[in-house]
Length: 104
Image (cartoon, rainbow, N blue to C red; front, side):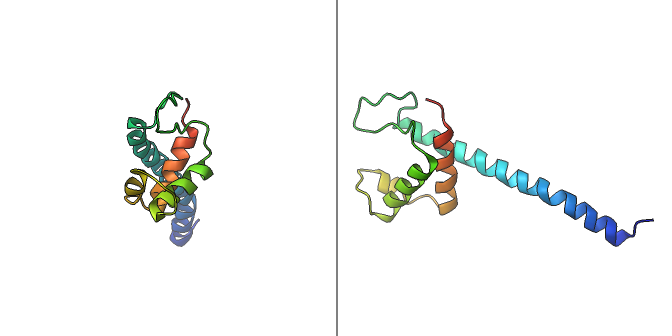
C-alpha cells in the first residue's frame, strides 16, 4: 500500500506541470489582450500608408527591444514612449510574443 506521504508527493509532482501550463496559457492570453490596443494605431492588415508603422513581420525579439527602448527613453517616439512606460517587463514580453504571432 502507498503511504499518504507518497500519495501527496505523487499528486503534487503530477499537478506541477499542469499549473505551469496554466500560467503559460494565461500569459499568452494576457499578451493577446494587450495587443488589441495596438491595432487602434498600428494597422493589423499590413497597411503601411501612414506615419505609423505596421508591426507585421516583426519578430518578438525586435518588438520587445523596441518597446523597452521606448519605455527607457532611448528610442525616439511621438507617443510610444508614454505608452510603453505603462508596461512591466513581463507584459512587454507577452505583448511582443502576441504581436509577432499575429497574422497580417
